[in-house]
Every structure is written in structure tokens, then in C-alpha cells.
Image (cartoon, rainbow, N blue to C red):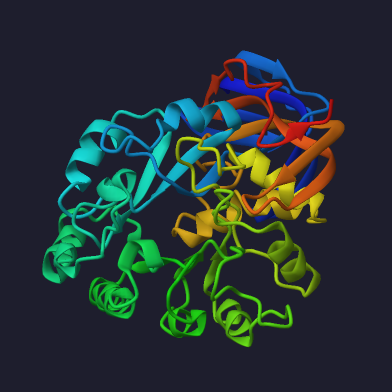
Length: 390
């Protein structure tokens, strides 16, 4: 059989299948066609990736990609594909009143695979750039119209709500959360909850989350976080993880604290998924791509295979795409990332000023999307959210 593309001689790391070793990966008709040592095949394009890491295409579980609808949001093709991310999950940039426009003008036109959570607020996060909370007035949340959106757009992954002081205020936090819970129960979909800077105790949020729901910004350093006054992980957080709630990083700088993450990892509480909360960089933001998030967790002691799991198999399972995305199995979507580990002296940090030193970081080499090569445009040697030492 002739293949469209062959990646030869790389070190395949595919935690979803428990595969790690020197293997060739072939693609045909937009899918993975074969994975084996020393494939004796012909291909339209053969790329020698000896000495490089070959992983399933990366999945960013939390970003904001409605770049035509809000000035803070990013173009997925400019941000994701150059850094090995082939699937971008939009975390509620649009609501029932704006999703159709998001789908037509971004999702359907992007080369990156863009999947979306719907926001509880009808207009999504349109008001964010103006500094106005989207649920300060609960008239922006219409329960029946949001339910109807899930009937009209079955591709939606779930419902997103920000239980953040700046989003809901204190009075609307619990009513918004309970409305979101009712909608998800009625439509049979998953719930993603922003838990950073919440005005209500974290336990009140977590007790409403069911298996498969997502708690995002899990390692934030704001009030009502995952640690108690003595620095121990709350039992409610452990209970949520045990019953299958997804613990998502969604770094953003402003929603991630190095010391909270360090404490949680030391106490045996790893995140389920690694993600960026990608928007246009601002002064307070210390992370600009998914490889930077992965590199941060490598510096915190996470094994490489687990960091890769957190951006491949784990998010694929979290959005109901296990076996199709996040793996390099014959028949799976033909997405892959070729990466390198660069040695050096790097610093990763957060918006609170905490830093961690690192002796290596992940950098992109090339991306395969739908079975074809996509070359990084000058990103191969760029910083991935780290400041290189002089």
C-alpha cells in the first residue's frame, strides 16, 4: 500500500495505548494507517524524525478561539498548529446567541480541529474585554434557550460556567451553578466549571460535579482553592477526583500557582489534563502555548509520558473522543506532533511571581494534521512560555 506520509525512526510516545519506542508512523487518507518498526513501504513524503519524539496530535482542553467575536481571543491556526496542537477545545467563548456565528466564521474555516463548550451566558464571553462579568445579571442566562441550543447543535461538548467573582458576583454564583447543573442533567451533557477566584467555597462547587464533569483552573492560587489553611489538599478535591471529575490545569498564568501545583503533586494529586486557557498575551500572563504548560510540569517532576497523556489520551477521554483522538492507532485521526527536548537553563512562572527552574523544555519540530505535514513557521526554536537564562 502507498501512504501519503511516513514519519520514520522517531520515538513514539502514545500513553493511551501504552506504546513507547522507536517506531515508524504512516498516514493515508487523513488517518493513521500503520505504526510499526522499520515499515517497508512507499509514501508520497518520507520524513526522518530520528531522535525526536512522536506523539498523537496534542489536544488543548481549554482555550478561547472565537477570534472574530472578541478582541482577546486567538486564531487557532496561528496559535495551535505551530506548537503541535491539532485539536483546540473552546471553553465557552460563545453562548446560545453567538455560537452559530462562531461555528460559521471560525470552527468551519479553521484547519485546526475546533470543538466547543457552550457558555451559560447567552452572549458567551463577549463582555470580558470590557471588564463586565457575563453573569452579573442573570437575565443573560436563559435556561430553555440554552437547552434548545444543545438540541440544535449536537456537536457541542458541554456547558461552561465561570463561578468567579468577576463573572457572577457573589449573589449570582450559586444560582448560576445550579442552573448550569439543571441544563446538563436535562440534556445529558458534561459541565465545565471555572473555579478560580470563586466567591463561594470550593466544596459547594465540587459537590455538584458528577463523573465526567470538568473543574478547570484546578491549581489556581486564589481564595477557596484546593488547599486548606495548613497547605493540605481538601478532602472534597480528592473525593471529586476519585469519582471521575476531571481536574484541568488551564494555566493562563493568572489561574495557576506554581506552589499550589507543587504541593498537590507532592501529596499525590496530579491533574487529569494539562491546558492553557489561551487568549492573547497580556502582561500578567506567563504561558503562551501548550508545550510551555507541559514543560512546567516536567520541571515540577511529572514524568514525560504522563505530561503527554495529559494533552493526548486524557483530554480525548474527557470530551468523549477516546480512540479517535489522542492516539496513534490505525484508523484514528491522522494527527501527530513531532517534538524535541531542548537542554538549557529555563524559568517557568506564574502571575504571582513564583518561579521554577528547568534544565529542559519541549519545542515543536513539525505537526501532522489530517495525515499531511504542517510546518511550524519559525516556532521551532521559540520560547514556550519560558524565559531563557542569559
